[in-house]
Image 1 (cartoon, rainbow, N blue to C red):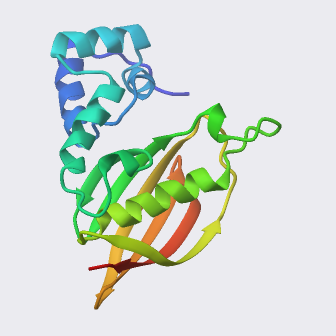
Image 2 (cartoon, rainbow, N blue to C red):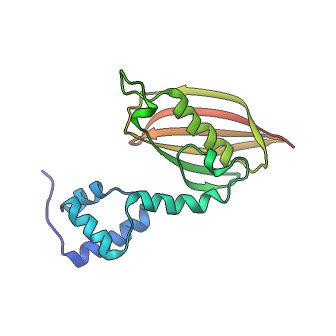
Image 3 (cartoon, rainbow, N blue to C red):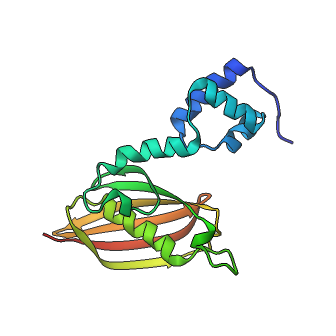
Length: 187
């Protein structure tokens, strides 16, 4: 059985601020569970501390990263761009919806997952214009509407005008997709 010992509001607030620095994308539900309080209490804590809700925190972080992208417009990135080190790596997050899935099974269509991976691969490379030359992809597990996709891209090699990028996508830390892209920079 879990230890449900409550801590004081002041101590919770201090811990809360530290936790937000470590993981700005933690949900109110996870915080409520961690501190053994209600979600409403967490929301009140956030208000008192001036910490915006998750969606606003994601948008704030994403906005900083969109300005770094050279290859495509920020509106062409599928998902929220969470982190970007141009020419090295990047992270995006996509909250899937019923519109992205098959009505009969509630399973997200593959082209939505591929689009997140490809747009992140394009965003992470340091080039003005690039096209996908080759992609080698593998879907490892089904994704249901409502699940959050976390894509991580890494530039593994650059040879001439070719950029080799590996992308993995996870749901709850379980890999559901992997792809290797060769992106060709066009002059």
